[in-house]
Length: 495
Image (cartoon, rainbow, N blue to C red):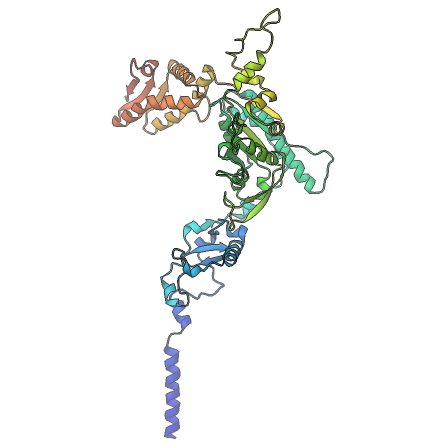
């Protein structure tokens, strides 16, 4: 009996010892780990979603992510492409010295304690609310009328009335065309198909071509991309491919293909891709680029990378239809005036119907006489011009327009300086004679409205430096004598 009782007591002691020993679950609970799946994680983590380390797409678009040591996330497409590239090339990852986490012995789990398993902020992006993601039904009532678009442009752009009218009508028709395309997809087919009309803007430097389109981008709710034609080259050469123009639009639309297909693309410096004259080398940045742009302007299916401007094996590709994209091309076209004068002066200089050869030398509206033949002589191929049926010319700025640009727009240059000095509780005033002097000097520089800021920056530098020294200064009046360096500004003290 004693032996049996001893055995029973020993068994009880063993059970108590094992019960007192902490289990793995107990340790995890003490460390805050191993929580039940029903409990909600931190609310801060709910606001963010993972993004792919390669293609930079969020989890809502690329699907579930694979989290690697170090907080790097990879989508399944990029991970599969990476494995395919490695297996096809026969690359031995153990021989790569600079590749992170490739030479690490993952079988030794003690090393994993030193790794930072927290995902860095750069590899996370804030989730979009479902209210914003919900697409509104597009109706014809949402289309802004041309006079509304022009009235909004008038608040920022001075002059160029004809150009603003043409752009307002083009954008209005672009919206209606998008509405017709949406209705046709729903099943209401129509025999009449509305074709898009791309625009060619011609105007001297500083006349407001780029500023006009940038202002339009702020006023409209369509994605707009501004590209530079000087960086475009033929495929296979150093520079950007033609598809990079569509990539910028896709990025402006947050990688939403359907929204990007109803956007607007502005290609600036289009005159820089004119056909080179008297050259024996291959014209990879001139006529070749015009040939490549034909398919985009007319409408085609283009494959572009998602989340990147460069094509590689790891970047996912998507197809964008350019049939519904409105293209606006702009350029200064230097020396085009001489081509126009040569054509206009071909008439007889003798007899009753004769005209003076210097008749058009001082004509401010000389660019308004531009024809397709003049642009062909400049170096633009006829196929390219045929896909830009709407041609609008911007006139050179006059002295009166320069003065209005200084004061009238909502974002006028003088209003910007008035706001800067108002932060120091100082009132800034420009006399009318001073504004006229600034406009006259800007016309001499022949760089358009860009010269206005350069002139004002030069004369305001000393004032912006001296005013913070004396807190008793109440107002500063800029006079013509100060600008002509024959006097100083009028300064009034407080009280």
